[in-house]
Image (spheres, rainbow, N blue to C red):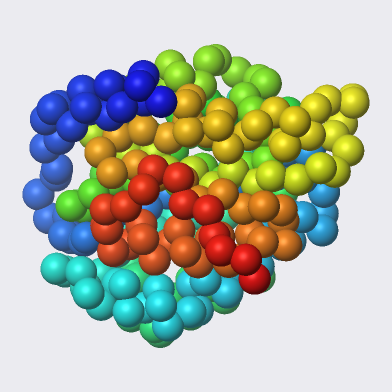
Length: 246
């Protein structure tokens, strides 16, 4: 926890890179990076996807966008697994109201879901960082949001990837998914791994970074809605957000 705070403080003091002229000002540039590794089966992958589709259609998200200074954000949706498996499902899209959110949600709902092996959070971060370059938007904040149900077991150390993102002025938020389902090759379950503690210590970082803990895949929809609303609004709050009972 102390290490993450120190890293976040260092990142806060770094100058944000100059943005290209002609880029559209937005309140937030957001990369939604979603785990489709071997520990996520087809049902769970669909639960994650549907969670984002429903959240983007929710009036709470629309209201959060409308309350920003620019009243618009830019979002892209990425799926990831191993260090060599990342794919952009929906590219950078301007969300400036319910109609735009509905179009993004519809594209996301219709796109096929990829499934890979291994879990490389570092690979997801490394893939996401250059997506902010020359994307046509100039965000007041730039955020990578990592959701997943496992620790980094492929690619370079996650803390190295995190530090590189923080040096660029990019914040990393998280949505760890806790569950007791059997894992491939007899690996420990996310609960046995204390995945929420792992995300808090090694994954999230930067000014105002936070995570929302999903107690299982069924709880993911509630968690992602709460995460998106706080993320878009840029509100301060606790580092770890656990949802109340259903």
